[in-house]
Image (cartoon, rainbow over all chains, first blue to last red; front, side):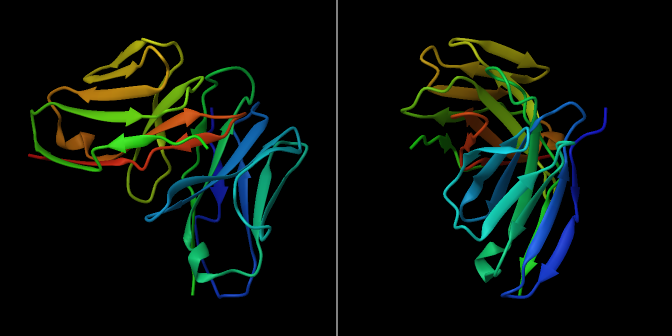
Length: 114
Length: 110
C-alpha cells in the first residue's frame, strides 16, 4: 500500500512569509502527527491530529498550526517565518489506536528560510 | 517531561565489527520504536517493542526492551557498509507523541 506522502519536498521562503505543507497518510490511518527535525534539536513533536481533532500538541509557538480534513489528509502552516524555522518537517501516520501501534513517516518537506 | 538519552552519538567502525546502541530513560514507555534514517529521507521503522524484556531479531539486528520498559538496546552483528545511517530510538509517550533520542550516527567502513 502507498506510504505517507508529503508535498512539497523542497521549498525556500523569505523571513516573514508563511508556508503550508501537506501530508497524505496511509490509507485507513486516522492519526497524523507532525515533527520538526533540525541538527541542533533533533526530532521534536509539533502536534497530532486524529479524526480532524488536535489530540496532542508539542511546545511550539502559535505560529505553527495544523488541521486535518475528513479524508485524514493534513496540512501544517507556519506563519511569520523565522530563520530558525529552517528544518525538515516530517509527517507521520498511524491507526492512532492501541499500544505500540506502528507509526510510519513520510520523506519530509525541506524548508529553508532566507 | 519524558526524555530519552541515546548513546553513543557517533560510531565509526570497520566492516564485520559488532556494535551496540543504547537508549535510556527515567520514564516508562508503553512501547519503544527504532528507526533508521538516511540523509534527506524520513525515518524508516525497524522495529517496535512493547513488552518488558522483549527481544526481537531482524537479520543481523537484535533489539531488546528493558524489563522495566525504561531502556532499550540495538545490537548489530557483523556490520556492513549498508548499515550506515542515523539510528533513532523513540518512546511512545502520551497519545501518539513520540519522544525521540538524539540519534546515533553510524558509519561502517569497508
